[in-house]
Length: 242
Image 1 (cartoon, rainbow, N blue to C red):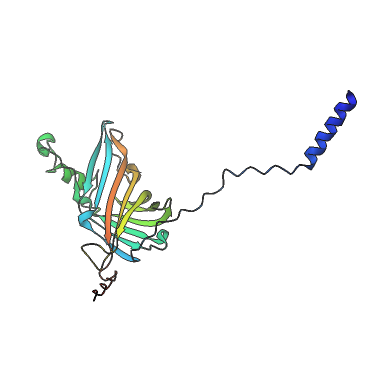
Image 2 (image 1 turned 180 degrees about the vertical axis):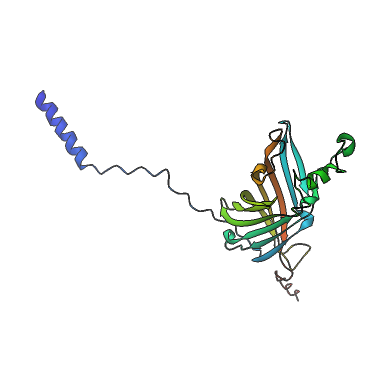
């Protein structure tokens, strides 16, 4: 009996020694392949903001009850666009803080007796504890890098300056589409983007009423950009059939 067991054990050992090695498990932490951007036919170059189809809105939690929403009405941006290499694209934007609008519904002075400001918009724009627009007359953003996260998405980092300070912010950007040519501008192209991001206003020194008015501010940006006139060549119409 012992001889049979020894023989069986020997055969199993030889079989194991002769068997091919098991394949190594696939690495689970391998770097993901870089995102491939969707094909874009719009030309490269500097694009101007289509102000009729753009908005800059922000939201902040008020007393933990609602996301108070306001917007700016005076802003501009220039996009330097490279469809062949989107990560080489860049954006420069400027906002007039005095253009903040809240749609405050009532008589501001009646409910804020003693205020030197006629309206809530004026208070928010000019008060030194808010945007202090009489002293700091512009808010600027200059992108510094763009990383693709999908064929239509990416993260854009940049320097945001207001209240005399500059700090980095990150925006999640979505490429919505293009029109080449634009249906109403036959020698120009149009491209559109949405962007979302958040920041802590106290980083720039605006910390009044925290936490009743939240520190975190959420940004919602929609923008269409137009290429220069003549940047799109119209195709000649096909000859009429004889």
